[in-house]
Length: 434
Image 1: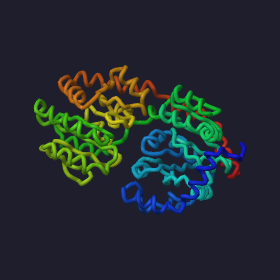
Image 2 (image 1 turned 90 degrees about the vertical axis):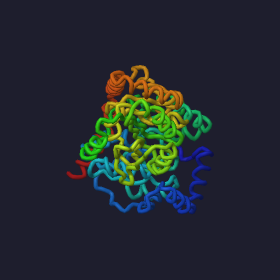
Image 3 (image 1 turned 135 degrees about the vertical axis):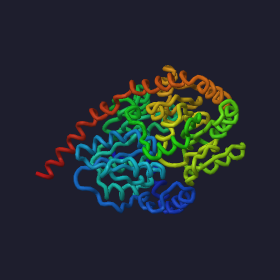
């Protein structure tokens, strides 16, 4: 690999290095907005308070919650082979999820800012033997520094959306240089594989989507029993992973439906828990009695909207509601992951903007396990149809569950592609102990 970088990459590295003195201001601003963990800001500068474990170490990096959830079974399988695992992510919510769901012994750190000396400091401390980048969070300095250190890099569950593909096509020399440093690119779908190939990835295998192999999210048994007792025989609908503009649609649907379905309860889990107070205010402004889970407010018989603004509790929502609207889809966000809801027996509604999970939603829609609602009016109408026909709702839930189960298998295919690398790490560990 030539050390001479394309001009655009040289410019990026110079600018990012020059921006290093501004990192404290940048992090302080993010901290004020709840986007950083105060006690762990050093990690964003590549500093670590945890010692590197002895033996081989696989570094797994995913941007946020969705990527981390997708590779949890993969992380568990690697750790079971006696190989150390370091996981990095970039959001506070993913850090909370890591604390709850990473296997014992797996280390989580917040990923360093993509500044050359921060990344070098990180690599000097952790000295990973293999890097797995999840989906599409490809930072130039991380890739260049890891490559320069001689660390093999692999993309797992690789995803390139059409929009990302078009943006990268504007910088062809840059993306060819970056992707050319990878040993392997394990793509989710043939379409992703084709885009990776056209952008310059030299070695590509289509392994399928790891998210189909992720178990349904867990739920605390005591909390689930408590909520079920509080709900009793009330009719329940839910909206999960919602974004600004979508909560008003589900609240409006509740107002339209509650006259025909007395005791109707709407559960809302905003994608970003810090928005919970604003969601409750929307419900109150609509004349509905709302409660906020993060404040410990109980779900009473008079509660009409229950805002689940907590981390790691979607497993509760999906077990309690027979029908769930999955957010990020009525607004132009690209849609959130519907697989967990499907695995836990919910019939799914979604808006038209689902390009982040286009293949999954297409499969669910074709199997009648999910239904597209174009706007707030259609959302209310679809909810009403399923509320009036619980058997149809149950059929949709069964179809959704069967669809995601039939699309599994990516975990084993991914492990098969990683086998030569993992076996080499195990052999080196044995040699060190000999």
